[in-house]
Length: 288
Ligand code: 13P
Image (tube, rainbow, N blue to C red; front, side, top):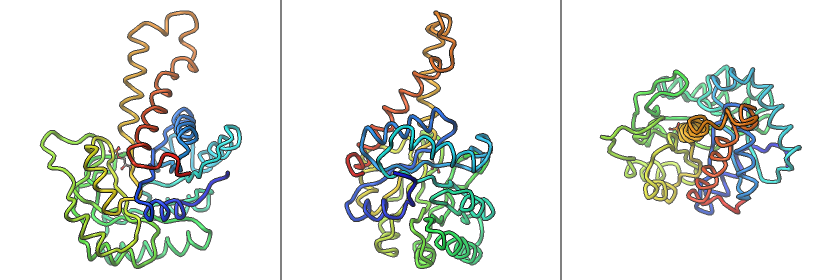
């Protein structure tokens, strides 16, 4: 199956009460591992690409070509979307033109009027080409790719305004942050999530900052309309740990253990296992 927009997979997830994982990619190994996990789990999947990661991978077109090549080579049969993560206005348009099947326009740092106006323009541009759109209200805290957010709690009425523009999925700040949660984090504002769900009806809601949220809280968020959960930092941590263990055990010095295909294998295998565990937790296993 070729690339698909995220719309149908999220409408299905919202109706059936599970969430689809967005796993951010950084390079070939990441992409291959996540696609392998999705196929093994028979789960739909969203490959998240930040503008910084796309630049690292030498541009949006390279990312699209790499993913399309892998879908064919690996015989991937499950639904896969390539989705711009926290896109700028210009970045979202560029991704639509480069062949992404889904984009996020993050206008949460603008005032609500400007967020509405810019989101509307991106929706028109993307929907005309069959590409799904995520918008954001209330910026997500923490730091991601140099973007530092203050960690706001979204206003449910502002969420309603953006939802009514016709976005396909909506990210709302509910005390979640990117990166690891500090020891004094008080948890997700599930009360506000409930109000956002009441205000936005059947809109698939997006939970950013998926790393380190307790499993019970994740499950409860799904019952309150969360249909897409973004995970990035956790995969970076498990990859780094597995790679460190390999080198600390001196394996790179044994035989041809320095070959990158061997050196990066423990990290890649760990990503496959971690992604499959997340798919199980989110309920998307066997939902392809
Ligand atoms: P984490 O890095 O905290 O998992 O968050 C990922 C994310 O929300 C991407 O948009």
